[in-house]
Amino acid sequence: MNTLDPDNIRQPISGALGARLEILEVFEEIESTNSYLLDQPAPPPGRFRVALADYQTAGRGRLNRTWQSPPSSGLCLSMAYTFRQMRVKLPGLTLALGIGVIDALRRLDISGIRLKWPNDIIAHGGKLGGILTEACQGARKNLTVVTGIGLNVDLPDAMQVLEKPTLTNKIVDLKDCTNDPPSREKLSVAVIESLFDCMVRFESDGFASFHGDWKKVDWLFGRQIIVDQTDGRCAGIADGVDDDGALIVRTDQDRRHVINGSITLRDDLDDIA
Ligand code: BTN
Image (cartoon, rainbow, N blue to C red):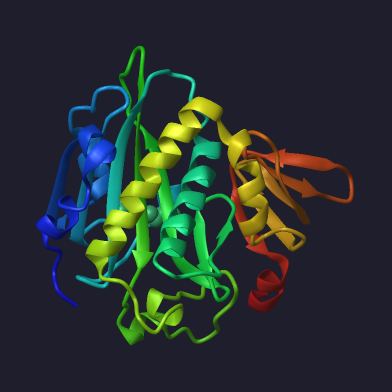
């Protein structure tokens, strides 16, 4: 697979979308596109900037995990967008942007993709990608949010071989989803279009307007899960999300709304034990 050609990404971003783009940069190698954008000047409200990399030397995932994607094998894309208000509920935004990524893939004829709350992109029961949403510090009236999308496009076979694949640790790439994966440039353009649309829609209507879409792609719904949080662990059945995007878990005692935590499938835990 070739390295990314910035012109093939910038040129199709035209019209109303192009008018809102501050700057789009493509790096051959960088520590992390999210870390880079967090250090850059914030775009003015309603505008966005994009950083892409062929390879990240220190890609980051949620909960301080690393994100590994060998050179030219995936999409490593971050977008900074400035909301006109401070009160943006990031957990719901991450879910909304996941729906945007699915929409981008659908426009490229790739279907059957699901989301595992809160930020995993799932195909064929394995992890196709992930989303990392981070707020910039120091803003007063507006909030700038940096969202990173990592998608496995064409991974070396060695990365996909696991001795004991479980539903939670299996890795898949776009080659597993289609015989004809799009170029990373086309993928970048589709993802940028969708992310921007979702930012604008989320800004005006919040997560509630994405709730119906979420139900269609909710991979955890009805599954037995274990939730690990800083203050302990609980087991239950995933029962969708609420209007803020919190995960609803039916336990033997109650119905909990989980805002933060790491989710494991009960079956996987039994496998590992
Ligand atoms: C996760 O699965 O926990 C989220 C992974 C997010 C990875 C992307 S790749 C582009 C951007 N830069 C980073 O360092 N991380 C995100």
